Image (cartoon, rainbow, N blue to C red; front, side, top):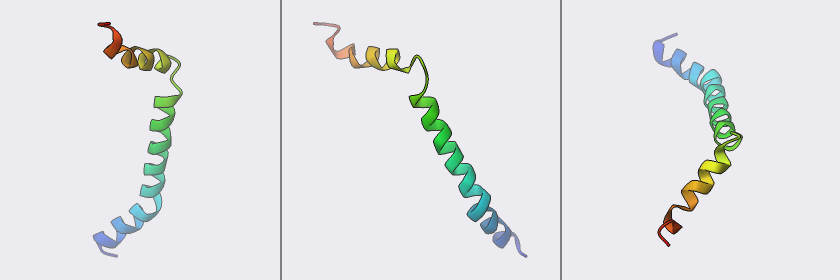
Length: 51
């Protein structure tokens, strides 16, 4: 088996699983942090601080 075929087989199986798990983990980190709401509320109120 040449290198291209081996890498292609790995990407088709375990690479896809790794990318999917990374996607789920990144979303969980962003949406499930306990202090995320405070940061988002502060960022949303920045335009109104001068009023």
